[in-house]
Image 1 (cartoon, rainbow, N blue to C red):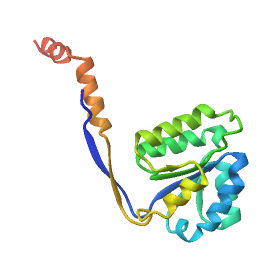
Image 2: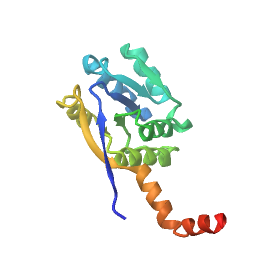
Image 3: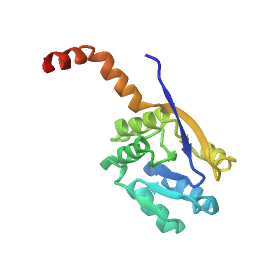
Image 4: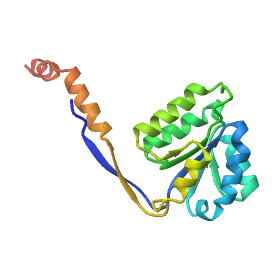
Length: 169
């Protein structure tokens, strides 16, 4: 079965998720301070503690979800699936084990699956925030999941039409 694609738009005003592990929260706050002029033009979201700390230290309006270990990473992943998050900045700490590592991996997977720009360190975040796409629309193609589900149901349930025909007789 070949995947059908759908063209989606990431609008000029982005919905940006800001996430940081504990050891990286200070670095993310400094990055937000350095990029305040750009970030204030977009809609900002974050996991619980990170969003609160960014608000307190930068004055940026950041909508907070739950803390990462309490499901915040999964909430942001769900928003990506819904098309409500366009861009993720996640300063992860590669040297510290996180109790919610499966949630983090799920978020990374969903961002990749839905072709969402994602920075996982300061350098990649700097490149992305200074990109010419940051304040313009951007079109990208992703798998048409609604079509894919319908096709899989038809593929895995080939006798459905026969069953329906026999019921009407």
